[in-house]
Length: 554
Image 1 (cartoon, rainbow, N blue to C red):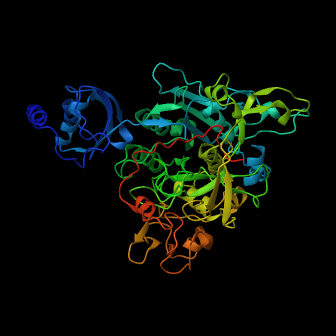
Image 2 (cartoon, rainbow, N blue to C red):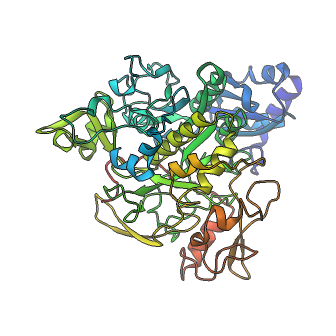
Image 3 (cartoon, one colour):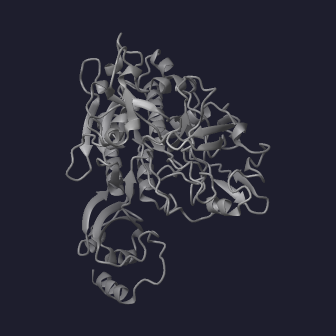
């Protein structure tokens, strides 16, 4: 302790002249008395001595056992001194987070799974979001709630859903459609896995905002409760900008801990596909923790109000890869996420603020009038993510022995590859037109196909990490990097052309797996956009929200 106090004195006298690799860029150089919440990651689990070193300078609020880190509140001026502790690996702030069916069900053919009694029964899905309202659609045949556990990580608030986002997400995963079933209804709004049990872990407030440390604490709780509630899937329809490599990002480390504990983690790609402010045409905008190679990162498709895939298009707002800093090929898969109708929480902020989210009763009730109090309509990768979470639950009900890597590999390999190469999306609010191309950075391995995934029996023995890509400035070509330690290699079963399909590659698919040739879609004649996508610097100025509310595609 004496050495740390002496070092602190010298630090405060000298100031900070240089950035330090142990301090995140958005925290480095801050030197006021203002209190800040930080996440301190350690090289090995912190000892009692490590924790005692912290206590005189700040309040330890949580210890995250699964990721060798603690959540501390302290004055900004004390933060950088803790890099002097030999066991400290990285310090970053607890950053703010925001909350990134009938047609949807038909598009991914979930109804065919139900006919074989695959409903996700007895599988636990943790929804880390704005809470879940206890609606009838979440009850089982006996009338008991399938929301089997609820906890709030938002200070001073219960686990109920005041924002409306979490209930909508939970409905896409596991609504039983009770409030829209019967002779009076023309549409029944059931979730992908209507038999699942839901674990409600609230981290977002009534405005859809929350703290990163709360999200990490909720992930830890899901790991702790895994055996109690058979939690096999975590749904994260939220995110924030990428600030550093996934190897340092505490949110990424948390989702990896869950993955390694045997829980499939499904994450929204983000809603910045329309961003061309840096001439990137929305490329390089994947949000964290969707930038982590372990998790399943989901982009959004526009089902155009039909169950046929032939007329579907990429949602113009869906974030595109590669990931910032590490350059992984993301998203991994796409699913319907535009104008999705799902369960509505009472008196929620979204419905009050955005009139376009409201659903007319006449849309699904014979002779109905006025606005529905049971369902609302939202768009975003937030809505596509629970479609894949529900699909994962179906696979795990059929084969409980599947690992997260095996679930990811099956979903990606069996995804539909034959997508329209060029599509347009029209902003429902501004009517602006966006042109998109189906490539490995927009649709990943393709469009979710539940029956094909359930029919597949392939089991991988290697990790299914999303592949990294590399840009050669001389040849101006982007290629997939080979890694024999992961499942995507040169094998016939799991090779590039099998999992991603030739349509996602620009040019000839050969031994080098050229992702992009000389004519890149981003930047075109502007080298600025290209350098932004392939530079090492993260995008710090962009705030990626996981939900556009009423601003979907027409």
